[in-house]
Structures are given as structure tokens and as C-alpha cells.
Amino acid sequence: MSGNDSLFNELQTLKAQLNEYNYQYYVLDMPTVPDAEYDRLMRRLQEIETQHPEWLSPDSPSQKVGGVPLEAFTQVTHELPMLSLDNAFNEEELLAFEKRLKDRLKRDININYSCEPKLDGLAVSILYEDGKFVRAATRGDGRVGEDITANVRTIKNVPLSLRGEDFPTRMEVRGEVFMSLAGFAALNKAQKDNDKKVFANPRNAAAGSLRQLDSRITAARPLMFYAYSVGIVEGERQALKGEHAGRLKQLSQWGLPLSPEVSVASGAKGCLEYYQGLAQKRASLPYEIDGVVFKVNDIALQQELGFVAKAPRWAIAHKFPAQEEMTKLLDVEFQV
Ligand code: NAD
Figure 1: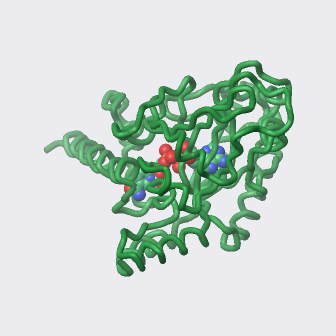
Figure 2: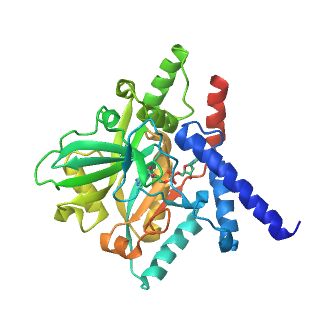
Figure 3: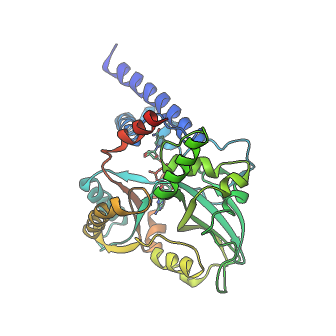
């Protein structure tokens, strides 16, 4: 077998493995490998596809967002796709991200970033019409998600009517549904006491709780929501236009919950300081985060930078190193 043949075989194996892991994670809410292992395989796949662009196919896991929406739910087609995020695993990759931005913009300007914790839950879109909650959906495969309106209505910090006035006629708020560590521990204890399934981690517990056909089950689960962006907006207000941080502030004024850790940093250097600060605080936060997200703050620059197949060019997730991940999955397996 030639070197190319064995590389091609490796590519096919990686694609099959990642497809299977995606199915377990996104559809069954039951991962069998730690995220760090998944990320390592994905990196290797991307490496081979970069070396051999002729092998890149649109159905490759490197080009796809999330999983297939479950048929048990009514499907919702996203008017603007709900994408994933590109990842940086270390300082060099973050600096390379900023360099790519400046190369693409063809100017060496100082870039400000909205810095946000990367909440470990699942992405949800909530549609408000004239300030009233009308529909909620999962990200699904990015293009089509699941209608989970009845379930999201039960989340205590999701407003059913926005506060104030002068709302856009239609506005899709995007954010993360997650479970606090305390809520997760209490839920797993109750599940165990009742001989029911124990969840592997807060993310799976949040996903499993949200994708329930009976919204009374969701209502009994300790879910929370933090907003982090907007999707489609009609009748847009000035405050939603200039900067991402301004958008978040406006959402908060309308009564939507935001993470208290959100702030703005100047340049990649400022981002690194934010990353280090949050890494130190991580263990004392009441919920799990698996990194931080940096988004170019200026919306005109975001528009100039645009998107690639799976993610915006103007944002990156800087992930924390994943030492405890394997033990986290194993611990639960031993407990069950
Ligand atoms: P991602 O988790 O790398 O980033 C995108 C997601 O981040 C968004 O959809 C949103 O839900 C979330 N997010 C949290 N805070 C945010 C914020 N402030 N702003 C914007 N988004 C925010 O991408 P993904 O496509 O959701 O998932 C890929 C990751 O999931 C992998 O890197 C891996 O870690 C994990 N995964 C694991 C397995 C497994 O088997 N263990 C399988 C599939 C995926």
C-alpha cells in the first residue's frame, strides 16, 4: 500500500469515527469519548484534508455543524444558519487567528473583542415578536433545528415578555441553555435514588432535559439560559447595530440574562489576559465552561470578514486544556 493509500484509509476511518461520535453526542446525548479525544481526531482529519484538498467532501464531519435533528420534534428551518466556532487550543493559535483577521482585512488595525465564557451547554434560538416569546429551537445541523418552544418556556430565567419598549418586530435571540453544577448534582442524585439514568456531565443533562417530548419533565429540571448574540432581526434598533457588546447590553436591558463574565478586550494580548483571568476563576464558577469565546466587537468588521462553511471568521473558541475530562466521564461510569 502506498503512503497515499494508507493516508486515505486513515481519512476514511476518521470520518466514520467522528460521524459515530457526533451521533452519540448530538442525537443520543450520550458521548462515549471525552471531548479532548474528539477534538484530537477532528484536528487530524483537518490536517489530512489540508494536505489533500482533493479529498475534502461537503459531507465530511469537518464541514458539518452538530447532528441530525430528531424526527420526533417539529423541525424549524433557521433563517440564518446557526454555526459552530473555530477553535484555538493555545496562545500561538490565538495569535494566528488575529493575524488571519488582519491579513484578510488587509490592514493592521487594533481589534477589540467581546470576550465571553464558553458555556458548556447547547445552543438555542429564541424568537421574539414585538417583545413576546413565540418560538424556540435547537441548533440541530445548523440549518434545521428542533422546535422546543414548550420546553424553553419552562426555563425560569427566559423572559416570556421583554421589559421596556421599542422592540424589533422580530428578533431571534441566541444563547446557551445549560445546567449549573449544583443543579446537575441534585438531578443526578434524584435520578440515582429513583433508579433512573445518571447523566455523564452537565452538558448531557442539559441536552437530555431540553429535548423531551413532555415539557413537564423539562420544567422539573434545573436549566438556565444566557444570551450571547442575535440571529435574524427585523425592525432593527440602533443599539443592535454598532458593536457586539452594545447588542448584549441592549438584550440585557430588555431583560434577557447574560453571563456576568462578559467583557471587551483590546487585541489578542487583551484576550489572553481575559483567558488567564477566567481560567483562574473557572473552578469557582457555578457552571462548567470549556473555554472562552472571542468575537470581533465591531459589527461592520464582522460583516467584512464573513463566514466559512461551518463557522464565522470573526470569532474563535479558545479552549481550556482538558486534563480532567477523561476522569469526569469515567467517574460517572463507575458510579452508575
Ligand atoms: P463548539 O462547542 O466548539 O462551539 C460552538 C458552540 O459554542 C455554539 O453552538 C454554542 O452552543 C457554544 N457557545 C457557548 N458559549 C458561547 C458564546 N459565548 N458565544 C457563542 N457560542 C457559544 O462547537 P460545537 O459544534 O457545538 O461542538 C463541537 C465540540 O463539541 C467539539 O469540539 C467537542 O469538544 C464536542 N463534541 C464532543 C463529542 C464527543 O463525542 N465527546 C462529539 C461531538 C462534539
